[in-house]
Length: 259
Ligand code: KIV
Image (tube, helix red, strand yellow):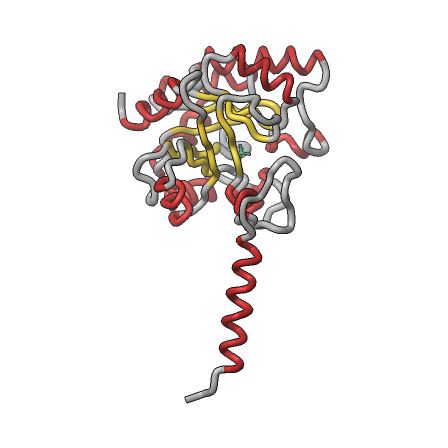
């Protein structure tokens, strides 16, 4: 087992033993800080498109963006598992999925994440067989926002709950080390968690429903004031602290006497 596989194995073994923490990070200082703080998984998510690059959603993110941000983040991380998101259209076929995963791995990711269940199982299996750990992503899938006409909570109907169970089993059998459950009703998130043999990591899926919790760094520190998801309680107001610091610097520039 190489170092990355060992880290992914440790995450899988956390099921029932330890609550897993996953925080997004997209650059060297954030990766380094989160690593030093003891966060278990640092996700270089394709949410980079929105919170760092100014796109309206994740469908604009490319492999070039991901490689750039994964390598910057990984340079700051010594201990945590660095997880790189495979962006939209980087895993349309099995061969492309393995090649894209290999590129993120070479950029410094220990594991990759891709969205979808039954339909993606063959790609997950092939990436895992190529020696690269995979974390699944089920429920609300941000890369499908345009097809679905918005962000829709999943698991509201019996049919959706049954289809999520099938997705969970498919990605688990394909060899994932953990599964992100995004935007799933709390009741269904709890049921999926009880069915899963690997840790489920929840975001927008209710409180205390999963084996681990996920947060986007900008949301939890209040660094992106223009949009904050309703399920996040920001713990700081970084945008305000930055504004005050810059205002104070500007004041000094205008008021300090010239020598
Ligand atoms: O890109 C991202 O930040 C994600 C999380 C929402 C899980 O995929």
